[in-house]
Image (cartoon, rainbow, N blue to C red; front, top):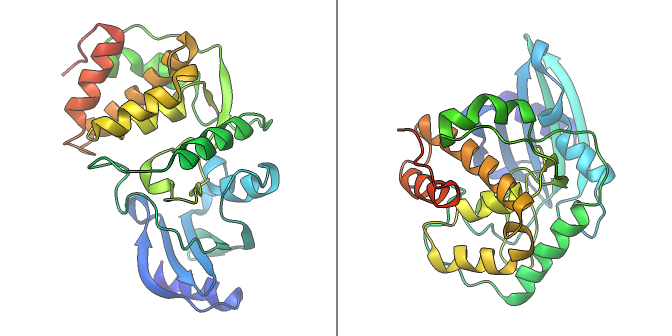
Amino acid sequence: MRDAHAAAARSLQVTASGPEVWGWQGRTLSRRAGSCWLRVVAAPVAKQGGRLWEGTALADALVPRSVPRPRLRGLLDWKADGSAYRAELTEYVSVPPVTSGTPVLARDVALPDAWWADLRTALETLATVPTDREAVRQRWIDNNFRRFLGIDPIQIHAYTTGHGDLHWANLTHAPLVLLDWENWGRLPVGYDLGLLHAYSLTAPATAARIRHQFAHVLGTAAGRAGELVALGQLLQACSRGVHPGLAPLIARWAEHLTGTPVPV
């Protein structure tokens, strides 16, 4: 991955510097490159392409610029030794994310009212973008609701276009910028906000602010359904050892919404 990143930097005529930032299971490697950010994603040749591979480029082409995000500056694809690589050169965002290295908010954070208003506007604008990208599939709900939530699967009828990975490491301090667009697409109404709320359960005041600020979504039947999908997927991640400290809080909140204890 380091060799691939260095090769991408040479081809895109930038100089990488600063600390390495590794993605999930070493699938991506990113570093600052002057006024840009260079990210390289790798996959076996047989598994290249698809939703995660194309997310950043499609977001740059289809999502309105009023949704604050890094602008794509360059794109490079190549293959070597049985692996496929994609390099994405985007604007460097100098404003730090709310959290670093984890999506979980460990303590309450003071964000100005304008930040919350900007987040609402960004999500409402994103919801208007037509796309056939599926960030969350009904099949996952059908196969996993009983296992992780202890309830019968629900049928999702209200979909919207969303970010798909809305957490605190993908949101900057003011001024707001939304990072990491590989997962965006069609998802249940309430999914994004349910995910952000779940990652805030360790910070009660911030969690309460989310429910107040977005009550027009989370307080509806459609929003509750989407939130349950987000909780179910997080409980699946927790079953694999991710976010062990957050797991009991997510389980407790899911039980609060459904009235059913989640399976052990």
